[in-house]
Image 1 (spheres, helix red, strand yellow):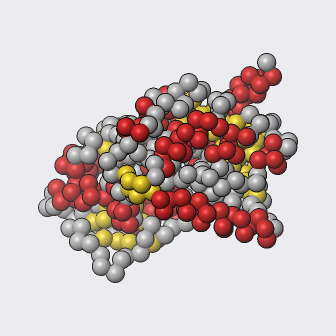
Image 2 (image 1 turned 60 degrees about the horizontal axis):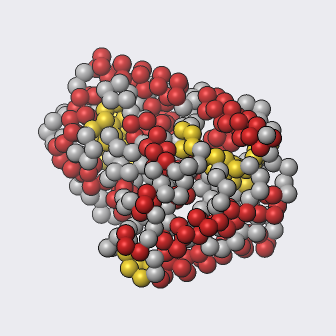
Image 3 (image 1 turned 45 degrees about the vertical axis):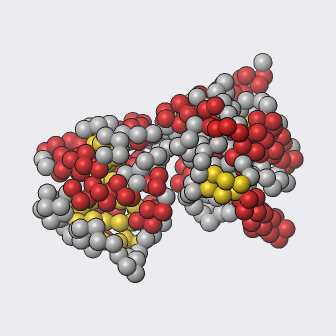
Length: 414
């Protein structure tokens, strides 16, 4: 069985890291798996990217050509839009390859056009890392056009100009005549698929993103803090870069409100922010803040998750963020809102705390609840690690994908 995975990059971004982990989980199970990308930074020989000058030039030019269409589209929605117009030139080589299955990941935008995807002749498995496949050009949306179809009368009031989302959705409907086998990492995204006008009758299966629990495991907390020069005895909360505040989905404003409710509630509380260095004008978050900068390698991130007491995921909308799974694997309880794919990561009061959706005060209550009792905290930490090992380990996820591939190929042979 030979699998070719397609993703825009190999390890840059959450979808890329998830795809790369799936690829290597399969290789560890002796599945003949390779990965094709537009841009590779891993140095991995199993990942193939354009080599010639022309191929490299096209991968650089294609994103800029695709952005031209966006100039005619006005919206207050800050979420990335991908009309996926420009042909990739890859379809013939993919159809002529010796792959048994083409496994698509984050291919929208630069890697494959809408028409390209419809022209693939090999059996396709498509792992969805956002909502783009069944929406218009948007990658995430709070609107319900994807459920009813993109028509003139249901366009949101904040969009103006050319209806790029409707045009993109209609192109998908026209060119994607044969259902593909879909995989979603979260139950929420699977529910979105089955309620969508475009893909409601397509086969879909929930398979979580994998993590190598042999590599991602707890480090002694005192040692981890010494390595990162963090205070040894202070309660530490970890969350992602505050630059994420530009995207309302990430819920940084909700996190700020939750931190206000923690004022004078937890003695010595301090914050750790990863993914950026301290900005020129650091916001006052009410507590001492430690900025770690960008930590790219797994070992550094593993030490960081192990060093802190609680990982915070204040997202309004998210699929199955790798960061939450990584924290659990390192034995760190997670606090998140009870929305979208986050309940697939957090078992309420078992591996962390699921706050009522978008209620910062309840998020603050959850943080206090976790830190209030040392014996309870140790049980939560143990549960978190165990839950990650039982639900997200690379071997388990690879076995699920191999079974799916076998089912897909069996249908083709009938």
